[in-house]
Length: 147
Ligand SMILES: [Zn+2]
Ligand SMILES: [Zn+2]
Image (cartoon, rainbow, N blue to C red):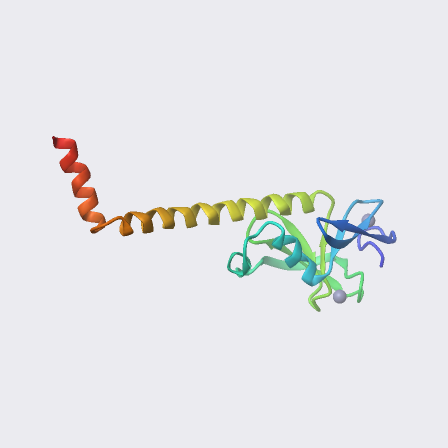
């Protein structure tokens, strides 16, 4: 397979247990369609956290798919300022040099955000389970304060 940017031969390499094809001259990476899911799985906890649609602001890319040679579609990954190129025939994704690192950061930020939300829900649940209604608890906090 050839690099869509400079035509160099791509070499397979292991990336966190996922096989990706890397260009040695521009350091870009090609991921098969399912491989993006696998890379995401290395940071995202479960299916729920990955269910959201990943593509925003689609436009035609200047790059061609290394598998079928059709022009690819550039898009923003999960509304973050990270541009990826993908083949509409689901052959895979192209990440320019540095974008793979940025993508992992984006995923980690996202998972951290979800974990924060989950732990807030859990605290709320604990509070509710902790006997009586939340309003009784809040009331007792205020009553305690007046004593
Ligand atoms: Zn290249
Ligand atoms: Zn293709």
